[in-house]
Length: 221
Image (cartoon, rainbow, N blue to C red; front, side, top):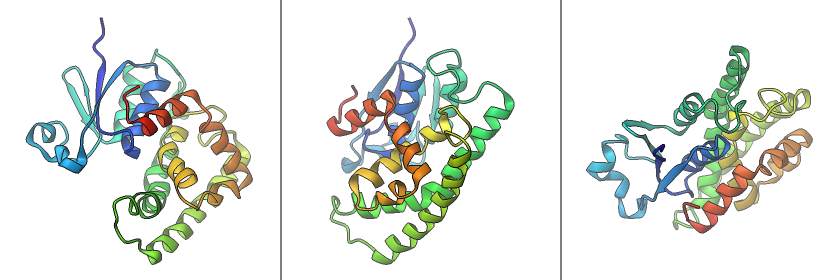
């Protein structure tokens, strides 16, 4: 009997929720192990053995330990290629390359401004940290420019890497979820016809609905 993989960290974390969505899409059994970051559990020696930077998520598959959510997702798709959504990371070299280029776009172009907005607008108030209005404006403008590129791309194809939902789309789910649902900047997505259509489609997937329930309840599901 297969041993469930282990994911360490709270579903509230965008990086943790990215990995959870991937596991659910791939129909891989997992155990979510809560890490109380407010109590500094992510900085304890035992945790640092599997995540040397003291961040979440950390991931274990029997004797294998990994960190960094996008690398974890790629590993899951390759290791469990025949399970769940078989096209999630492409079925040929060209498909994989297309997915990889949009994953890189997400990590390098989309994540920095969207992540800054999520922190400033959604998390800073909860943590009683002063908001930086200049930083908010700057990153709103940066994200708008990225989404203008996405708008053109999504006029040509149903999803970012082609006409099938892929890891490239999935990787955008966590930050977009918070921008749309926990800030007043959701119009960045809804005001762009193709981006709005794309977000409606990817956020309606059962895998992501399950993760959202986990975020709201704080449970492993």
